[in-house]
Each structure stands twice: as structure tokens, then as C-alpha cells.
Length: 228
Figure 1 (cartoon, rainbow, N blue to C red):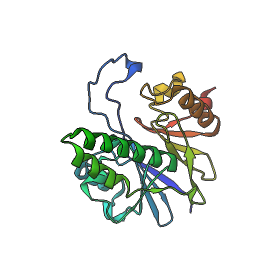
Figure 2 (cartoon, rainbow, N blue to C red):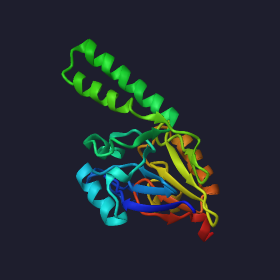
Figure 3 (cartoon, one colour):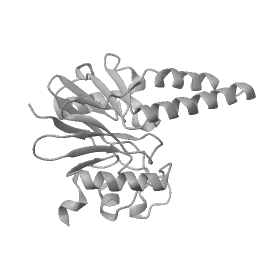
């Protein structure tokens, strides 16, 4: 059986610089993808609130949250994992790229220490966030023979995608490393990228490899090189 994917929810940017938007005009959420290989059902970037995502799973694939074996987050930014906080994926294993996991946990540790020292009231919220993040495990290099992790550093310090390798073509689920189809066509990166140079290199490397791309905030698309 070959690896398969389904777009559960198409994401959107809060504002799209390609459309000449300069400030948020909508609620940002990431594209959520279900990747299936045999008995493995990996939900990538569960960005919508739990109740809404539960409905989308049933609409798109006829399954509920209890059928998901793994959650994979391309980044630990809160807007890429909203549904996790609802507790609907308690039976799934949670994964993230190791570099992203280490970076985000370190940032939370440092922020919590500063908040405690200054007596800020949001210390409890920070501790809850850190407890949640610590439930994630570093993702393996391969989940199955046809599903591997793919480093896409730059958009966030440890952004990591999934590389799907069915027989016919190569598919990359990118998270924020590739924002939208229009960003790809113009060869530009997400303007909120943590490291612009590294993000541009990751984008270039990915474009040389991928036939099909699932961007962080858009529907599935062909790699721009398919049209060259």
C-alpha cells in the first residue's frame, strides 16, 4: 500500500503580503493534513480548535480524533497546534522536529524564569504551556518507509516538514517553510521567518526535491519547477 494524504483544512495567513495586505485582516490558521500509511494515521499541524477540527476530520475522511495514531507539528507555534489543547488527541503520540522542540522549550524556560523573577501574573500560563510542550517527543527520521522527516529550518529555528515518497512523485508537507502557492511562484519566503537567509536556502533545497507541495497556509500545489 502506498502512502496517501488528505487535506483536512486549508490554512490562511492573517495578512498576505502578496495581496498587498499590511496588517491582519483574518484569523490565521495552518493547513492541516492527514497522512496515512498502513495503520499509521499522522495528522500534521492540527491548527483549528478541537471541535471544528473534529468535524473536518469526519467531513474529509470519515474518521474521528480517536483514529489518529500520531500528531506531527512542523513548528510548535501555538497557532499550528490549537486542537491539541482541547485534549481530543490524548491517545495519539505527539511529535515535532528535535531542533524545534529544544528551541521552543528553552524559550519557554527562559520566559518563565523571567516572569517568576519579576512577579508577573502569567507565570501559571507559561508553566502550563511548558507542560504541554514537554509531551512532545523528537520525531524519528522515518515514521514508515514512505514517510520521513525533512528539515526546513529558517521559518522557525527548527521547522521540520514531512517527506512522502510514493512511487510516482515526491511530496513535501512544509509547514511555514512555504507559505502559499503565490509565495512559491514568486520564490519568496514567509515574512515572519525567524532567519531569512536560512529560510530561503531551505525553500530552494525543497523546491529541487519536491514534485508536489503542501504549503503551510494554502492548498496542495505542484512545485513551480513543474511549469518551467
